[in-house]
Each structure stands twice: as C-alpha cells, then as structure tokens.
Image (cartoon, each protein chain N blue to C red):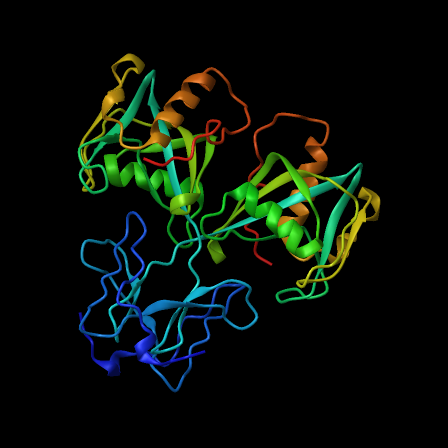
Length: 201
Length: 201
C-alpha cells in the first residue's frame, strides 16, 4: 500500500445522489484512493492519511404509498434532485432503524403524516446509483398532512388527479402503478422493477 | 465545528459485524467524531483532519435458501463471527449490484453454486446491527457445490438432517422455517421477523 501523497487524484469520486461529503480542499482528502484491503476481494476507498477504509455499500431507501380512503399522499420536493416535482414520502434508512419505522419516519418528516404500514408493495433495484428501495402500502391515520422541511407542499390526490407529468422519479410511477394493480388485494408478492426498467432518469 | 485535535476520543466506535476498518493508530483517526453536519438533522461521523463526512447507513445482506430437489444448501462458516456454524449463503450487497445478483454471487462465492432466484422469501430487520436481510428462495442449477474461501465445508441437507444445534444465526432458523411453510406455494408475501424476534444472538 502506497502512502505517497502524490498518488492522490485531483478528481474525487462524486457524491451519491442525496449526499455531499463536504471535503475541505485546503485540508487532506479523506478516503479517496481505491485499493483492495488485505483479506478482501475488491477495491475500497482508503484514506492515505489515516488508513480508514470506507466500506461503501448500497443504501436502502424506504417509502410508502400512503392512503386516505382512495387518495394518495404526494410531496412536492423542496430539495435536489428534482426540486418542484412530486414524489412519495421516502428517504434513506438510518442506523438502528427498521425498514417499517424508517418509512413511517419519512412520512412524518416530509408531510407530518402519521401512518400505519400495511404491506410491502415493492422492492426496486437501482444499481446505477446503488439504491435498493423498499416501498410499502400504508394507511394514513389522519388526512391532516402538512409540508415538512424537504417539501414545498403536500397533497392527497385521487388517482385521476395525480400530476403524472410532474413526477420526480421513475420508481414513483412504478409504485403508483403497482399500488393501483393490487389495491384490492390483501396478500401479494412484492413487485420488482418493471421489465427492462433500470430506474435511470 | 471544532477541529481541535484534543477533541478526538481515544475510544473509536467499533466496527460493524463483518468489517474491520484498519485504522493505523500511529496516524490520524479518520471520521471518528460525531457532529450534525450543516443542513442535516442527526449526528454523523466526521474526520477532523479532512472534513470527510461518513454517512453510515444500514447495510443490506442478500442471501438465499438454495434447493436441489428437497435438499437445502448450507455452508459451514470459515470466518468470524460464528466460525464452524452452519449458515445460508449470504453476504453484503455490493455497489452497483442488484439484490438478486448479489444473492447469486454469494452462493457462488461461498459454495461455487449456480442458482436461479425464484422468489423473495423474507425481509428481516436486525436494527441493533443496522442490517436489512433480503432472503430469496432459489433453485440450484446443479447439485455440484464446493466450499468457497469463506466456508469450511458445504452440503445439501434434507429437512430432517439440518444441524439445528449448529446454526450460526437466528435469521437462518427463521429463513429455514419460513421456507418450509411456503415450499409448496408459488406466490406469497415475504415474511418479516417472527413476532418479538430481534435477530440478536
């Protein structure tokens, strides 16, 4: 393992969607060089200054199709990417959190919504950005919702009123359609990506 | 944000199960101090030397109950934790990998097994160690299996021959039982943790 500072690249790998490592360019660079650690079989980002190995693995996004009677909760995004577009309440699962608890937390953070998780609707894979999305069907415990910090506005939409031209991500379309297909069912296997779809946008 | 080196703790947070950041104690410490980054709402590990923010999120474990006729593939672990105990082929999902591809890769790495994924059997949450496990039911394309680097031995077990006293983790018991319950079914909703079970061992 070389610790020669001249080996540091001037270009750093870009941040994942949704996060921006704030590296101060006047200081050192953090774990930016790729090497295979001893006993491992693939390259990891390693810090040449301190030896820290950054085991970067896919992240879990948890979210829900939240229903009040026949209306679906959507949130208009106030943060990048896709500011101003509509999405389901969803976000990164946090440490020591179950997937159901994470989906409920996101619904509260983005729309002050209290929900009851009913069923796993879908597991979507978006390998290009190393995301696995677990999307649940949930019931709103009250129709009182309001925009959280990450939302410009939130609203409950009837199916025919969903702003399909202003949806933030392909997987939001998938989840809406998959919910529609199974809305009368109690038990069903979760959906995956629609055939041939990668989630790229 | 303080960058005072005297604020560095002498105790570092322990590694997650299955990984060991190799920090050289004669150098600096890497992202070991917890602070809330600007625009965030919870503490993250930050490196005082370079400002790198270590967004640590739960990790995804992918695995499979792999079947040849009525026999189930198990692997005797050659690595910690639980060396010498039997487990299903499973491991951490890697970047840019789909969950199905990851489960198939693990079966090959641990048992040189070629498999076809059939169905999502379960989504288990083990929040104490920040793990989400996606366990599939899969078909072995051939009964020819052999121990990979992380296995002492591998074998195909009839149900009644499974070494229940030498199983590595609670979630392996869960997956075996959940498979047994649904082995004749084509479509079913995935299982979660058995009621009241945390996966702690």
